[in-house]
Image (cartoon, rainbow, N blue to C red; front, side, top):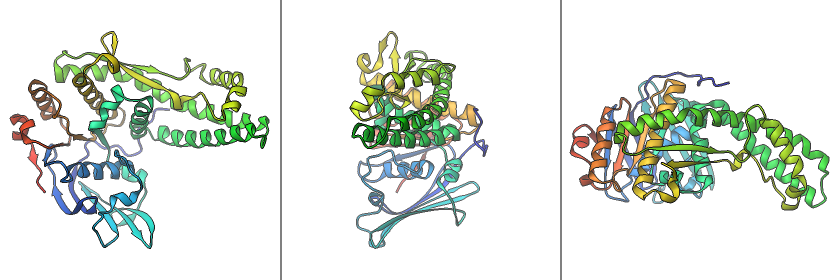
Length: 372
């Protein structure tokens, strides 16, 4: 069930990044260190675009709001394309997003040959901490589910494929329920889609249970390493339906049967793993309501670093860690503690910031400063 990814690596490094006509960056060619790469520029210069391009190559999606892929192409470019080129130790990946005759296309290549997103995701794996990451502690259930789904899809191929299948089944089931409500379909058709939805949800649920059972130790260890036990919190899984792995399928089938009439009236699926949530508890209090913004920010960073450790434990991969503006809301003591921790890490790290004065001297001394 819990198989590692098909390609097992020890460390992942990006040696070189080239951007052409990507957002507000017309031409960029950067060489990176295997350890800490520090990117400090004023807001609007494109430092977050660097992290985004790496994330995009890894996940096939962005962590920012996007109207369409047309947004990736420099608005002043006459060529009608944006290009991302990444060189790792052994491979070269290239993504071209083009808009020719109002036809938007994406082409991904590995060592000059066409490839797919799954292959690219296997070669470049990232964990991201960005300003929006605080939403996993104080945001909506949708914010937390999205983060969880992206992460577990990075860890497990079966989770990623099951999640994609679940979304398709849910969409089809919702369409059928709406048709039943409008008298266009029979209730007898519902059983097939319900069974498929529950079977697929069970696979997703098993991975989520595994994750929440195992992540606590990583959170405790990371929090202790960075903040020496001064910040203690725990994570609590809140499934939409309280059940066990053994009873999951029967519990959900009963729930759907008992609420069939209610769902038909509303016109959609009212229950399922797409409504799961989890919360961060600070002592006996829920961090979302009782924690300060600083505590929420620190906790979300500890959680992202714990995800990095969890990914390593499941795949033997030291992923690349992307950190967008972590220092701005921390006090000096927390900045120094965080800097010392990052210096002790044995994987590639990218850190952005708008003010060099927010970066501890010890971090600057142990980083490669990236200028563009």
